[in-house]
Image 1: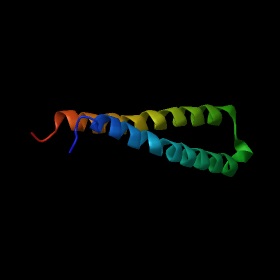
Image 2 (image 1 turned 90 degrees about the vertical axis):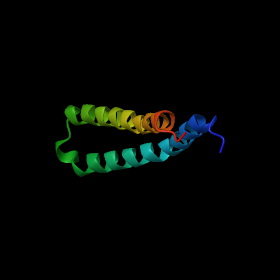
Image 3 (image 1 turned 90 degrees about the horizontal axis):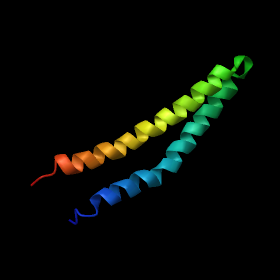
Length: 76
């Protein structure tokens, strides 16, 4: 097993799935906005932007945790 390129492979795998993650987040966000359109205000739009940014930060932390797992918990 070639472990030299493993961090790059981890990043490529996570980034190749990001479009699906963002698509599903957008889909559920639109469904939520449509469901509550009667009393939608600016606070909900701000909350939605905060949710999107937070979700992507947490998604990226999965990649970072997997790379940390590779470096610190590797079998020797």
